[in-house]
Length: 283
Image (cartoon, rainbow, N blue to C red; front, side, top):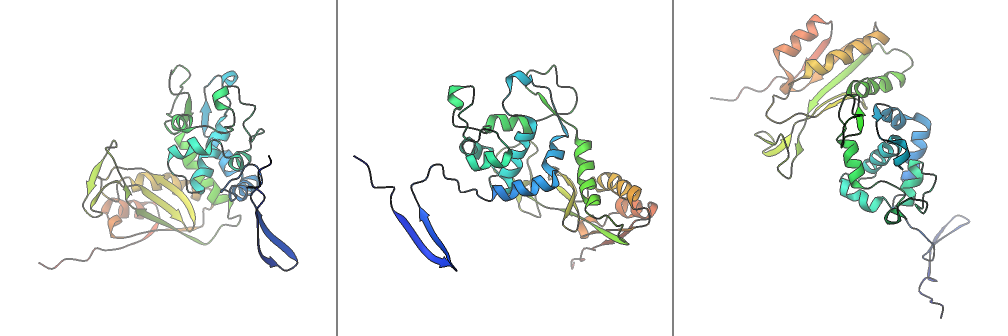
């Protein structure tokens, strides 16, 4: 006997002459429709593809079903959709909408080689975890790590994307340096308590120019807020100067970056700076 449970339709207020209704008798359903917008952005900018080119795949191509581009795309799009935890991808591996955004030719996953992977067009958490644990160097002889990462290429890519976004050299740019807390919820390596944030956390360093991210460097919380700032700023400023030699560069930060090392470096390299000064507490 034919069931009637999928025949219900909900009608909503019309939009002009357009009828709006919800049908519950369709096939696969996804709550991640925004993935298609991410796909359109990627098709225009190729940012994720260029990011994937910073990796080197030492895996046997005859034995893989997810190339580096699709793995990086899946992880980046997942983060943009709010799925930060790798565990989410055990369920997302079946999401056909995300598979379309990633560019899978078989978004249903029905053509997967392994029977247990049928219906899962995307990678699971274990495969993505191996991607995130990528190391530098030649990994062709490694048993477990088979995807290498060139960190210098990633650093250069962030600056290049910023430079390409502005075809005409601006008279002035401001580089904002900042440190913030990345709370920890377990016994991760490099776990330290930070007195200001009153929590166990990492203390990553960020460098922005407007809305453009130029640097994101993970650091442990036992370091000063300004730790490694000069080391990260120097190659960024050099790359910008090579493209825009006449642009004034200003470094801006709060009192946590008011350090002699940073100010001396700025003065020696013709970089202006605006840094906060901590309030002196009463005795």
